[in-house]
Image (tube, rainbow, N blue to C red; front, side):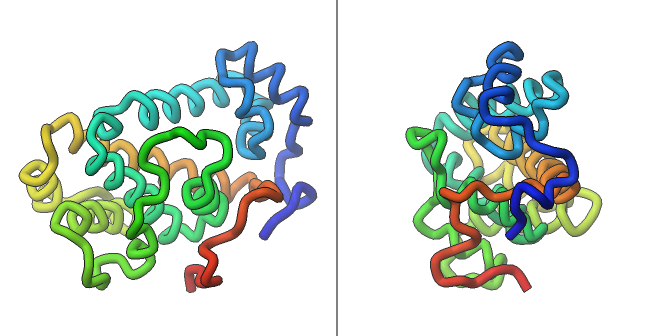
Length: 198
């Protein structure tokens, strides 16, 4: 686990990040999040990330349907696991800021650690995990996987958004790793059983 002294770009203070973020149109409570305290050095970057986060997680096609919301969170958690992003995992496994955000931590979230080898995944979950694996480990989701998602999700908007989420959250793990974003003290690394990626 990293701490504030290991961040490759110093974090703004919570107060300064809150002022910068609010001026950029972000929710004030994001000022205490280490990732945003680094991004706030570029208010434009912080605002874009905040806008994507809010539009997708609060208003997205996947958010409109509970089963699809769970798929979105499984996808994000699988991205975090494959990329060994402790920070992303913690923020989606132990939500603190957006406590009322729908879809946080589906009951079977730990299945993402085993991926397609997990025996209890349904068809939509399996296709979602396959899409993540193909996108993180290769060049993109295969036509076969996209076609499977199209047959299982409610509409093409959900398919587009799910693939978009995988791509964007994968990119975010690269930012988090590059900046060595420290995990805030109120978050716990990985899962309570202590298992982390090999």
